[in-house]
View (cartoon, rainbow, N blue to C red):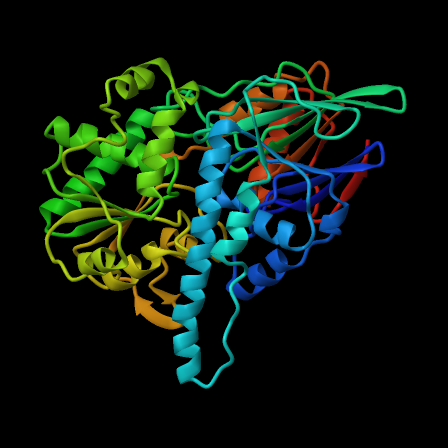
Amino acid sequence: MRINFHGAAHTVTGSQHLLEINGHKLLLDCGIYQGKRAEAYSRNLNFHYDPQSVDAVILSHAHIDHSGNLPNLVKRGYEGNIYVTHATKDITSIMLADSGRIQESDAEFVNKKRARRGEPPVVPLYTQEDAEDVAGMFAGVNYEEAFEPIPGVVARFYEAGHILGSAGVSLEIEEKGRKIHLWFSGDIGRYKLPLLRDPVLPPHADYLIMESTYGDKKHDDPELAFLEFRDAVKRTVEGGGKVIVPAFAVGRTQEIVYHLNQMMHNGDVPRVPVYVDSPLAVKASDIFRNHLECFDEETRKFVAESRHPALDFKMLFYVRSVEESKALNERKDPMVIISASGMAETGRIVHHIRNNIENPRNTICIVSWQAPETLGRRLADREPEVRIFGEIYKRKCGVATIGGLSGHAGQDLLVNYATAVKDSVKDVFLVHGEEKQAMTLKGLLKEQGMDRVHYPEMHDSVDV
């Protein structure tokens, strides 16, 4: 068996790991790389293998850095199944379509400026139509249900607790008379987060491919992060400003709304309008209601009573049209705007930041990890000037980074995740993390007696 690391290696984005087993090829995730625009476009456009040679794809969850390059894979000849949990099937279908629409829209916006400068137009990475072609290739599977993506491999999904439908992937492999158990973590969630069930640790594995995003950092208790977010909202709206929150449309957005609902219900912050400005919002609401299997007991009760705390909220408004979205930037009254994308690279959030970044009354709340070179990372780093759509803007607004709200496991849980297979594992491969974070985690695992921990380079291949 050979493992090829074609994404999320020495970086956090673009998850893509190609397994060669019994003469067949199995792809784990097919995500978009996010970073400098020109570099990202080139990386995402060109695969380091022939998509037509891939026999099956297993998708851990719907986030675009794990699913977002599937339309290109299909455009370039992939014809097999894409195995997913049922919730991931529904969410990814709408997220990819939205991604294609956003890329078309962003290309159109940028091309107007390029035309005025006499520059050639850019072509979107893929279109909404391209993305919609992928939906018919999803094969939905229940959690813990066995399926055979390629000969000699029995796979199962286990709860990852990261977003709705997210899963760790267990692969029981038989190759040339040898039996191997490989476990792919996908993105690992956290304990005690609202809405979702807790992540399942791997009970056994010979080989473990796992994320290392926060390998150098212990998360604050979610309750402390909630209080920090509350203080930022209270300070901003009482000062007459807007709170702008870049957030993934599915998962983080619902958690943020859940927290805002609590704050206003308890009287901890003034009651101001909360706008979810994402074309995915209404569709995502229906998907959340249809997948009770993904929720904890408290949330299932809310849903059954049609009063989901992340979807039904008196001060909550879903923004459907572009005109409604633009109108928010004309208003001066206090409000909270939550919009995608989570790293502020595409979509309506970029326009909200552009229109509000130079007002000192406003606050941009960073509530998730930001990839290097993205607009979200530049804001998190509090750069005094940022480039948006080719133009320079001075950052006069406040920035609040609320790390404890992350949907990714912190250092403690990452160590627990790996050491759960300490007695059986032969090799651990750390992916989905920058070097500092991954090497810190590697050192901690070594202290636990786990000496065979690797941090593969992009496009490395390993025979196991």
